[in-house]
Figure 1: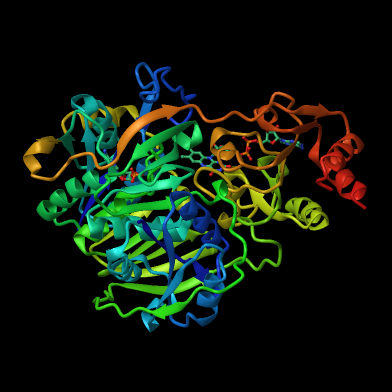
Figure 2: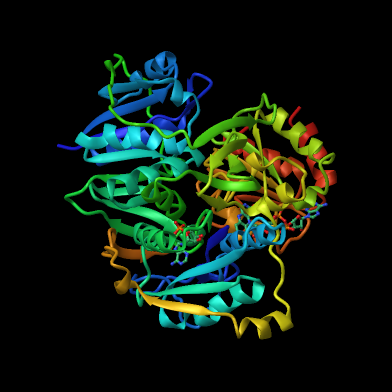
Length: 248
Length: 313
Ligand SMILES: Cc1cc2nc3c(=O)[nH]c(=O)nc-3n(C[C@H](O)[C@H](O)[C@H](O)COP(=O)(O)OP(=O)(O)OC[C@H]3O[C@@H](n4cnc5c(N)ncnc54)[C@H](O)[C@@H]3O)c2cc1C
Ligand SMILES: Nc1ncnc2c1ncn2[C@@H]1O[C@H](COP(=O)(O)O)[C@@H](O)[C@H]1O
């Protein structure tokens, strides 16, 4: 079975985000970028399924600008067999990403597509669900445990009420939550090996998907800041302060 | 005029309070507000929904297949039910996040995730980058608007003097069988619900172990508070995952939030930005949590928390 993995590049989660003064977005120039943390988890899960003999081929997919190659090489260094780079000079919104992924799914016929539950730049949390709908296949979102036997995946999901377990027929889309696994580190020899692994590039326009932006961004602003409060010296002072505010 | 359809979230025959918050958002958009209840037995849920102030009509689809909220099963029904609407909303809980994008793709439209403010019938504000920036977006004026509602940004509506009418809805849609519910494991918990509690006490890695979390629970019980946790505390196995607060856990807006042994990483802070008053107890005076805390107390939690619990009488 083949597995397709979403492997998006985003501003690293440790970066302090700055909004551009003209409100046209956040500063991404000269800022550290990394794989979306949920996508590293997706790739790790796919690699483990290959190591168990359940998957044969793991392909990472990135939709983004021409310089995405170095990022995709990291996915190959982590262990993916190949990469597909769908070139799009401008960022794509989830519905477009899902339509692109559907094209690749139709061509590659994977048994499983594993995406992150959300990309931590736009925090949309949509693409996996949209792909599953367009493909007419099951979705198991927010996965914290995946077990495959034959043609069925049993997936435990982190939901508000606790842990929900679903059984889905394959092929299916799974989106990852943080506790699914801990991604491995890339070792130096793997970086060398990755150099000879194939990266296929496709122009987004060549896929024949409708890729107009659906939502128009009209401005970005910094969030309202909370007022810095006061330090209290001890517990009695804290209790008094809370009482004074009518909270106790 | 706008017709806004809200997908009700419910469990064990009860309406989730998140639905009443979606009604607030719908009122900000303006128009007729309908609530859609998909369930195997909808009676009590529909009756509750009909009492929400501002709701004009409750639509009910009762089918055995709707016993569990499986997105793949619910989505085609919601997509069909929304055919005469201008807007479709659901809460940005794991229920709504799972379901609505599937509906959006079936309808071929985009989704606005985590609506925190309404600027117009097609213009919204939403957080991006873990709440470190606020994006204004416009949805196309000629298409169905689909959005999840960031519940921490909206108050629940009150009770209406008169209940809205409840109507059964017949939908001619085929439901898939490729997705099956197996089980739901819930932590046994008779404390207030984390997402709707007015007081929350959370513990972080500083608490040190599952056993030590008893300190947090004891304080919470004194305050009548729900209990939350940082990701580090969940990852370390101190408490179950449904207690995680933050970007990838629950986004909450209690009147009082007490963070104990939590450093205040941005991913955690994004979950508590809308809290009324934040109290932080941490032994590190430089911890970022103190940047947002209304009242900060520096010291060892193993000494301070029992002392606080005592002081509350
Ligand atoms: C994609 C992504 C998503 C994430 N989502 C979330 C999320 O939803 N929620 C979340 O919380 N985190 C999230 N995180 C993790 C986040 O970055 C932090 O790692 C996490 O919040 C740290 O938890 P903590 O504050 O409990 O632990 P630490 O950062 O280790 O802090 C522990 C604190 O306890 C204090 N302490 C220790 N001992 C004592 C004592 N005896 N008395 C008093 N104080 C003491 C220390 O001074 C320290 O400040 C996410 C990370 C990523 C990458
Ligand atoms: N441009 C992209 N390139 C690769 N994968 C993507 C892209 N956009 C979305 N995805 C996948 O979809 C997941 C959810 O993204 P989102 O719906 O944008 O929050 C991500 O974690 C990725 O796995």
